[in-house]
Image (cartoon, rainbow, N blue to C red; front, side):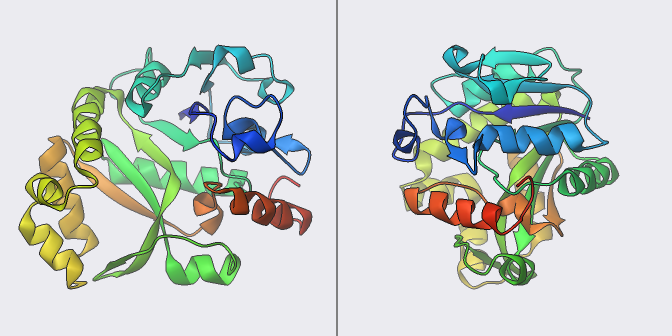
Length: 254
C-alpha cells in the first residue's frame, strides 16, 4: 500500500518548543522529529511501497525526511493537504494516510493495519483503539474516549482512503468542521437518532458505520487496532514530555 504522511499545520504551542519548526511535526522527541519517527515505522514496514509527505516546502530539506518518494505542499485546511497528498494515486487503491505526530508508532502496527484494511473492502477505514488495550500499554497517556455499545474507544492516527471517495469526503469534513460547535447542526448532519443512541451509550460501531456510509455515499468501516501505539499522539505541550518519557523507556523507534 502507498502511504501519505500529513505533516502540515500551523505554528502552534507545541511547534514553538522547537526553534525553527514550522509546525509540531518537526519538533524533536529523543533526538528525532515526530514526522521522522512516523517515517521510520513506515520505512521499516514490509507493507508500504511509496511514501508521500505533505509538508511546508521550507521543511522538505529536513534530514529526517530523507528516503521519502515525493513531497507535496500542505494547504491551509486539512482537506487541501489531503487532496495534495492523494493526487496521482489510483482511484480504486487503498492509500494509508498517517498523522505525523505518532511518536511510538511501529512497523508491526503499520503492517497489521494494512493487512486488515485489505480485508474490510471499504472506501474509508478509520483506525481506533479500545480503552482497555490502550490503558494496559500506556496508562499515563490521556485521551478523549467515546463510549459505544461495543465498548469504549479513542480515535487513532491512521486512516485508509480510496482516492475515488475524496470529493465526497472533503464535503463531509467541511460540513463537520462547520457544525462541530453547534449541537443542532451536528444533529442535522448525523441525525437525532444517532446522537440519542450515543448519549445513552447504545450506539454500536455497526450503526455508526452504516450512518457514516450513508452520509458519505461510500462504504465506511472502523478498524479496531490491537496496537495502542497508533493512538499515542502529541496534541498539547504536556504531551511532548510524555512522549519523550515513552521514548526514553524504550518504546518504538528509540
